[in-house]
Image 1 (tube, rainbow, N blue to C red):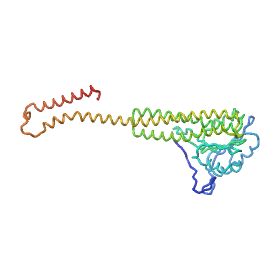
Image 2 (image 1 turned 90 degrees about the vertical axis):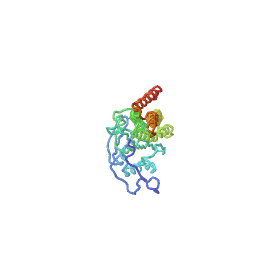
Image 3 (image 1 turned 60 degrees about the horizontal axis):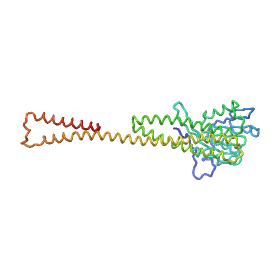
Image 4 (image 1 turned 180 degrees about the horizontal axis):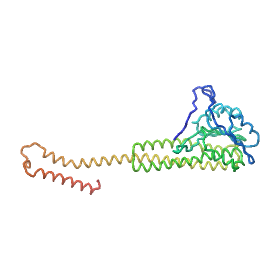
Length: 353
């Protein structure tokens, strides 16, 4: 599971809100898309800078600015300057290891959370840091890398769906709901993976299988760490007194909250199952070791009387009763085979073999 492609590193001693640790703003290419809409109109375009988005301000429409890529700190600085975003919030946008949270800063709301989705033909799980700024007539979203995760929301806007009749708070809800819906896809992926491991564990408990189980357990821990705070984020949006969240949108947020709890409960169940799989593996190894010791013990038990007989007739006394008997060798073999047969019959009767 791919967790994070890059990190935003901070040097110790820098003042709060510093976006450029080396003092030079990064200018890596990013993709900025703008969708401006209301119930009657729609404009969609790709822009090269935040300045081109300012034409949609104070027009009475809802503007969704989506930025793919966090490498260009110059773009992040421009967002903060033109939309009056606090420098600490801009720093949180770049901190991809930031814990999901929601902050109410009067004239806008800041939300960050983790997005999980499958990527590539192998179905690898990708976890990305998503940030949103919800304003009175706009939503600005930040994503680590370009992807098609938000395409369903874009399609609903293009098709003049319900989202066109509401404000930016409903748009933010739609983005969060789309992220939570992808959690269920990821959960289904891990459910299939757990079932395959369980079947393999019963038939062939190898050391390599233990490594895979342990890796899956770490993935569950990281997923839980990413998802668990989400319920606090949704709860904060539901209970905030900010006028940016309408009462009509709170109803939909409660539905997202229910889905979030369902995801958390499922992850807790998976974690218990994986812990049980580790116990099963240890029990299987112990059972296999007991079976090996059982076989060795039975073999040793069979050879104990044979060793006794061979030891007696291996003594070097000159005068032994059967020493010069013509058929002594064959009789000793018959006695030894009879002892083995009797012991095997006894073991089978006791169901030891």
